[in-house]
Amino acid sequence: MAEKRFVYADNAATTKISDAVFDAMVPWLKEGYGNASSIYRKGDESARALNKAREQVATALGAEPREIFFTSGGSEADNWVIKGVAHSLAAKGKKHIITSVFEHHAVLHTCETLRKEGFEITYVPVSDQGLVSVEDIKNAIREDTALVSIMYANNEIGTIQPIAEIGAVCKEKKVLFHTDAVQAVGNVPINVKEQNIDMLSLSAHKIHGAKGVGAMYCRRGIVLPNLIDGGGQESGKRAGTENVAGIVGLGVAITNAIATLPERTARLRVMRNRLIDGLLTISHSRLNGDREKRLAGNVNISFEGVEGEALLLTLDANGICASSGSACTSGSLDPSHVLLSIGLPAEIAHGSLRLSLSDETTDEDVDYMLSVIPQVVDKIRAMSPLWEKIIAYS
Ligand SMILES: *Cc1c(COP(=O)(O)O)cnc(C)c1O
Image (cartoon, rainbow, N blue to C red; front, top):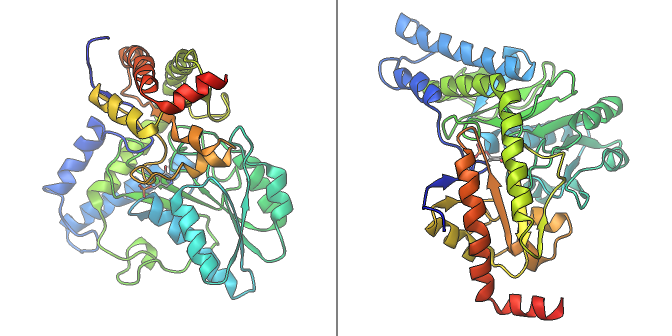
């Protein structure tokens, strides 16, 4: 086996903070501690740093600064939009929400809470390639539909959805459209105006920013209920003294992600394809999700006769950090709802491996993974009664 190295291939779960982001944040954790709401210069410096970050996030999305609201992350933004729209439009008799079966739990569990409150939720299916159909969305829209919420790129299989087309349908039918773009921001070109996106969620820690900070874009003219009542922060809609360092870091992270996007996408695609082609030479393996319409850094492959937990633990022992589904479901033995949604049987879904690459990933990392993973799969299969059955019947 190749000489052991440490390979972080779980960037869809979280990323390492970049030097540029870290360096930009530090002054705001030390000398720049002024409260942005204070009148003196030390406060005003913080307020100006927040303004700059708001402009940076707005620019990255093709939005206006006043349409950006800082949050504690993607989950908070998802909750704010979905519950906010539901509760304000319920008064007008609109109690129907459309989403997809393979959303992140921040969306699915929020919809489930609303269902218990009396809202009706339509979960559109996804194809075996992990794509939502625009026709399905169109057909699901009713008189009483308040919101369509479809993720931009899936966090497990990386598939990129037809967001502009869905946006156009929603605009035509006069229904609000939200997208959870946590995986897409900085990895796919986004323009909320051109794509008719009314609301969008993003998170800093998926793009080399800090954990616990994100943002919600809300098109001007749409009035969401306040998320947190209190002081006047975030136009009075999300009170609480701002996380200046985290927000400054988000501004830098998103700006850098956009600036390096074309070059990074080209480089990651090559590494991703090399991984996919190499891993598919393992017998009884399959790629999950459309091969072309997927994030440049996402690899998701199932190996029959392999148990995901065993795979991850053995890879960890070899220095490789990976995932077998979404981080929220690992620890429980439920197969991933995303892999089930594209039609995988539970036992194959269990044996899936997600490798998510980033700026930091090198060709040597890819070489190492391609040398270790086939051996690990072989080793696990050699001990698996399930694998014995599979080869006996094939
Ligand atoms: C990570 C993630 C979230 C949650 O974001 P947090 O900032 O960790 O709350 C939501 N949606 C998707 C698609 C994600 O990948």
